[in-house]
Amino acid sequence: SSIEIIKRKKESLLVQNAFSTSGMWNAGLSYGKGPFRFYTSFDEFMSPFLDEDRGAFPELFNLPSNVYEVSLPKPLGIVFEEIEAGKGVYVADLVEGGNAERKGIIQKGDVLIGVTAIKVIGAKWERRLLPAIDFDFDTVVGAIGSNEDRWGCEDVILQFWRKGYSDDDDGAVEEEAAVRSFMQFFNPPGDSPWRQ
Image 1 (cartoon, rainbow, N blue to C red):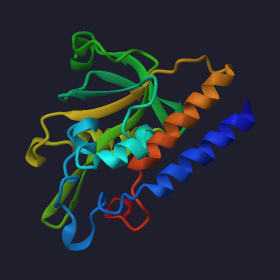
Image 2: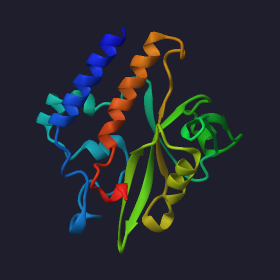
Image 3: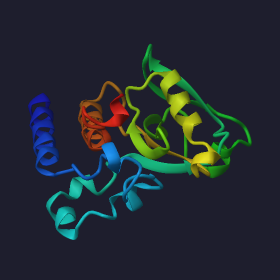
């Protein structure tokens, strides 16, 4: 029901507000340093957090239902199309014999919700997973393209959501709310260099 979805959204926001991510987003002299400067996988990225955090906030330490992460070398071999003009992309097709098809995980219709990107400031740089659920096509292509060898990137990390419900189903709204809530964890704060 709609009331249950709103209740879950509020609970999720309360959890995220209670869980401090202040050390996760570097700025100033700390930019480009520390355990969060180069995203390689979800499990590796979450490894610096304490076991007590994992016990208190388990929903932050597990990918949501129907969400998966994949590492692919470029060229990816994925044909993306916008879900609606300027907002979100999905897998329209896979290039025959391409890296994505050979990996055997990604399917047509999967929605891109996260992608790694490189941000360079002066002589420092970081690679982060960014929430891409509302990115337009050009922003997705730019993020993928920024994962270059010169920054130590042998791959691009992508997170996809394979919808478990049809768009007409009540479960689809709840599932999308859970995915969006989860991706908020990776959203840079307003004062982050990633917002500039």
